Image (cartoon, rainbow, N blue to C red; front, side, top):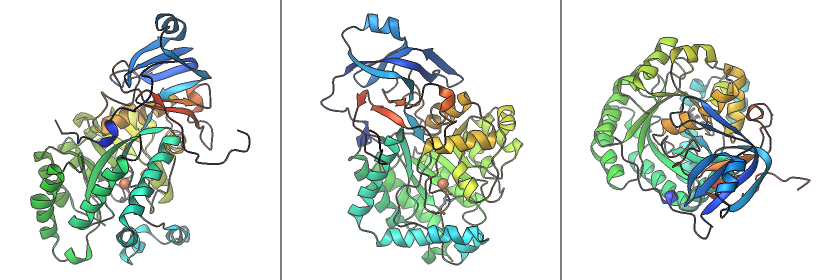
Length: 430
Ligand code: NIG
Ligand code: FE
């Protein structure tokens, strides 16, 4: 069992009545407690108490039995669990729009990286940025994600590269978590690109990470999970295995950027380690997906990255056959996925893979929560789960992946509280 750092964002929301009933919905939809199927409650209601779901069911019945609860009117709209974005690289400075233009002109991601652009360009911009600016920009991004319906967000470090620079980013992530109501899951992405000073000493870098950095992150509770970019252009299977095995010994959950640009065995390694998730998988085969299914490792699809790099996503029919659990995430980063809305990414995945509305919902709720090891707490609205929910500007679950640009939340509940939302775009008619 991996440990969960006491994130400041798990505190109660102060000054809010703790007994509420959200009623007059078109339907409440939620994964069942095992995340196997989607339960639908037409004209349903949810009762929140002390930040958690007390009951979900028929609106008429719950309104009768909870007459004392503060009523909140959903105005005949769809209610889902708060969404879970289980893969982002949100802490960075700058942008790489010029590089995007180069790629549209035919240059490859690997060639741009080899010429000093790519991840290293963002590493330099991040190193040059002030701490308080990085922390606030991360907090602002988390607020934008909440306004887009995400109440749980994973954030990876990874644009530091050297151990001290990675520790700096992890500390700033803790600071940002204190500013916002959304739940932040911090992941130490310790193998992303080889830092220049370790180019001829890769073994030394791995040893330092294993012997010093990982124990320090553990002692200071700076992250709950550890990740690595396993690719020809990044780190080998052997290097990733050494880091992740050590991370597991220390009690971290592990994840892997696997089989993205090339198929080099990343999914197999994730399965061997029974990792929480294997992410990307554009180059993975059906056999790889079966291995993930057997290991209970969630396969995370990142449609924005696949689209930006011109790669294909796997077909829903093959994924169903494999039996694997599938999540969809933004992969938000300045290089391959400047994607700021998880629902937009889910709408893309639905089209590119062929997911139905239930599969799409599972991919951004229960399965994404499982990729973070928190599926008992978030990603669904069964009794006992945290009261994280969204009222959407639509009436049916089928509309969630349908509209483009995606439907927007009306109200976002975090721990049973309907906090004001930041404005992410100006609306002409309020
Ligand atoms: O998940 N694959 C590696 N890392 C990021 C891209 C990082 C970048 O280009 O800045 C990803 O796609
Ligand atoms: Fe990524």
